[in-house]
Image 1 (cartoon, protein in one colour):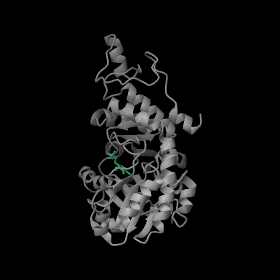
Image 2 (cartoon, helix red, strand yellow; image 1 turned 30 degrees about the horizontal axis):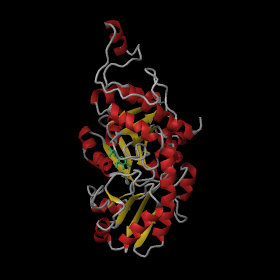
Image 3 (tube, helix red, strand yellow; image 1 turned 180 degrees about the vertical axis):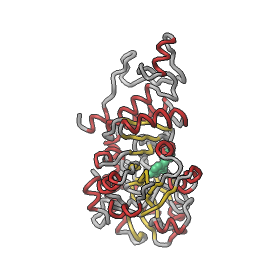
Image 4 (cartoon, protein in one colour; image 1 turned 120 degrees about the vertical axis):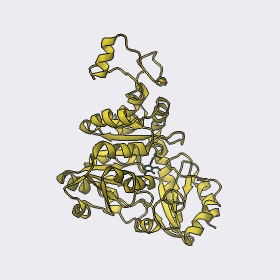
Length: 385
Ligand SMILES: Cc1ncc(COP(=O)(O)O)c(C=O)c1O
């Protein structure tokens, strides 16, 4: 099947033949006899036992997403952060070391600077773009190399193939947060990355109606994580959310194509606007990581960040001036969302750290939706004025 068909195709319901799977809103599953129960707990029978350990809607979702990201398996979590922290806690132990990129989503950055330290794990933040730039920071204790590409919110890129090659050679696993592009526009596993994580809250769901996270990898990584992280920590996705997410994914390509087309037009207009100092968008001709983009991305995506002249105050003023774009964090919704990282998603990161990561106080993050592009522009132009 070609990719679009893979997205849309649904499984045949084994029960009553409904076109769309029913929602299995049940906490537990009945065993016909004690022997079946024992076999399921021993892993000798594929049936379900208890929804924290597996549920038909969650399994259906996990199988679809594993195929879309070219992985052998997938685990669904109750949020993107549960998926990300689940990976770290599942893989690492006291004494291990992580190399993380400097430009990360705020809560991921906070987890790596605070929570993980309590478990005796060291983290070094490095602004690497290539394996060559990463290499000097890997030690014999380094178990994980973690990054986002494109990064949030500056949209800088990391060359996945070279980073994966160096990390593998040094015995470290690579984890990529692929939230900004979705599996439709980028597949890190095809570029040698070991583990992909998603905040499914964003493009995969697409409709802003749920919080969810996904981890995709090889069987030898997913199977132990399912037994240890999902079972013992219990940050599982609910059957209802798994069902909603599965339905959202079926239109991913259409939503992504339209949002991306709108973003390309808006980024070009923003780049020529006198109130704007700089635009970060991979589709612009002067985008600094163009060579990396061509190697690994199927399109520029639909996230634009731009720096307003006038800093923090101007950023806040723009937030209070837009009328069509929704002033809200999150991204990847069918409706356009706007937010100001310095006062919102990245406020938790100290100003000096933010500046090192290119997050100017006047930076605005714009998640372009599928509305009529002229309406989005009219609103933005009015607010910029
Ligand atoms: C790039 C990225 N990764 C991870 C997350 C965390 O996901 P969630 O909010 O689903 O926990 C976010 C949330 O905004 C994000 O933007």
